[in-house]
Length: 203
Image (cartoon, rainbow, N blue to C red; front, side, top):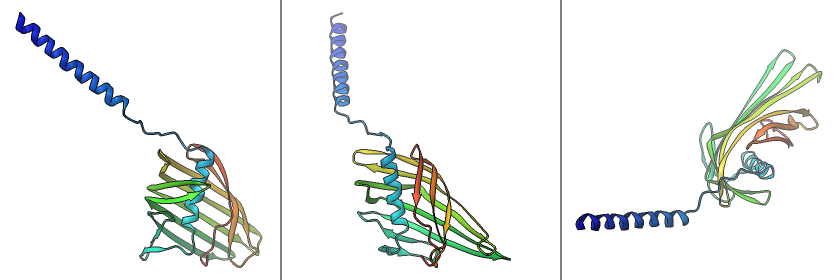
């Protein structure tokens, strides 16, 4: 009986010590901050990515036949592809574009905020500009879709993008472009983002 009591006491001390250790470790653990981006932060993330993707004079790290890898402003890199298809059938001209952007540890500042972004796996922008007859009919359609993993200060999360392009063509210059609105889902928000232009092959 004495031996059993001593063993019971020893187990009690051991279990109590383990519980105290577990509680102590739990108190010292910092939970990751997964607070979603606000609408303002989401727009800053999106605009920052577009600036890098559409930069006409990037610092190129690597180039291949179908893509280039460019340096991001504050570190990391982004692989981007750009494809244009120019078709003419009878009196109809169709210019289609297909862009992709796949960031990897890409760091940039936008809207006064500093982001680190990775593609999950990428963001894709597609669209088409159609001109029929002698400026008789215009139509523009397009989309931006994909997912990005982001870090902002001590916060992190994912941003799903599903936007539709609509607007009017701008024929005031020698290069076809479009000024319009991207509307739809951005990082869990309903967004409407004005876009200045979608360049033609020369841009």
